[in-house]
Amino acid sequence: MSLTDWLGPQEWQAVVLSLRVSLVATLVSLPFATAVAWLLARRQFPGHAFLSGIVHLPLILPPVVVGYLLLITFGTQGPVGSLLKPLGIVFAFRWTGAALAAAIMGFPLMVRAIRLGFEAVDPKLEQAAATLGAPRPWIFATVTLPLIIPALLAGATLGFAKAMGEFGATITFVSNIPGQTQTLPSAIYAFLETPGGEGPAMRLVLVSIVVAMGAVVLSEYLARRAASRT
Amino acid sequence: MSLSVALRHAFPGLDLDVVFEAPSGVTALFGPSGCGKSTTINAISGLLRPDSGRIALDGRVLFDSGTNLSPQERRIGYVFQDARLFPHMTVERNLRYPSRWRRNAGRDFDRIVKMLALGPLLHRRPSTLSGGEKQRTAIGRALLSDPALLVMDEPLAALDEGRKAEIMPWLERLRDEVRLPILYVSHSVPEVLRLATTVVLMRKGRVIHAGSLRDILADPLLAPELGAREAGALIQGRVDSYEPDGMARVTTAGGTMLLQDIHVPAGSDLKLRILAHEVILSRTAPEGLSALNVLPASVTQISGGLVQLALGNERMLAQITPRSIEALELKPGISCFAIIKSVSVVHS
Image (cartoon, rainbow over all chains, first blue to last red):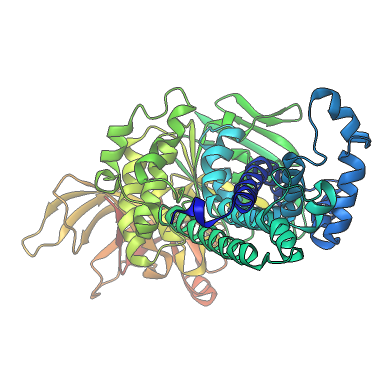
């Protein structure tokens, strides 16, 4: 029996959608999380504490609140959503909305992990590179970035795991439409609400466990490989 | 070439106000920890912006009220106390790091690798190097950045005695082979004695004196700054011949001396260190002494227990008690004999 047969079409859809949503959310937010982590770790500026507070908000607020705020901001009637709609960018009740919700919920976790990485890089190495003539962006790319690879991987893994598990904000913002916005957790929730849905739910629970374990093992392997190079 | 430095910088606990000129050769910035040596070279290399001042290298202004070149633009090779090699790169990639950004950088790669014997290390990672190997790599990397000036911040301070002894000959070679002015921060007298030609004495953020090492060592007012046990002259000598018993006849400006354990060929030049507390003074020519080296001298200056003597055109210090100074009626112009108990060879 192949994997495709083992999972029903709706379950299969949910798994693929969740992987797509989580990957997109992680990859798109990684550069932003890196930039914000760098600002928080290396720069002192007015509003430092405010930025830190905003970034951490999704970690502290109930997910439903975040989902609702996304809905009134990025919904087709919302201030941002109505501006983006003529450009063909719609988040509400689309898989892109699920990715946005997942990215925002995972953002503080990514920033925290990457910020620790920046703080662990000795600025004295960057000073040394400056005395050797290298311009700042080059120093960032050749000295700072390679040294925070383990932190970037840790941040990406946390962000991906959070995105795979994100439920509250997603269901509030984009609802639970099979094939459209029904991610793995939403699907498990829907099956458990349906008589006779325990079987599919249990299969999706197993898939969740395998994906989560796989992500952690892969990230640890990559981090160890990066560390052994230093 | 010359480096001209004038800077002021105030920070909690230290008010830095430093003025000095460093001619070519090795200039040692010497002083106790916390006197502002590192701050001074950080300002020179552009890693710290001083409150005010002027820094110029060969007439090129690096910093003044209207100019503040970045470290990238200054072309100053910096050898840090902690080496600061890039941990994720091999020794070779560390050495080649500057070559992308400086026009002439890396041109001397083979020569510098050979001079510092870095060949066997090229494919190693910094974490697998010993302290001495790391410092050699750091020196090579700084040299390969095509610097106009090399600054070294206590490059031996983090090493144990064995490693220091291992790296010292490389520094001497560097001084003799690379035509590059070097600013060397240290609070170690042996390092300064072996390497420096010029010394800038610093204390509590100020320059007490800047001048040639030999003048400072023979100055009864300045020599104690190097440490009470370190006062004493550094004089030039030349091995004339060897006696049948193996002792060397060494000619100095003050007369011929007989020295033991000299292992260089006749004709070699020697730098001789004669510590002030190894010199005894006598008003009359002494007889029946075990000391072999008794040279005629005249007193030129007295300060505290240190008596400065002229031996030909060399200056030397003797440390004696105020009571003896009084008993011998020593004062400038008086002739006497310097009985030298021991001499050490600093560098040949």
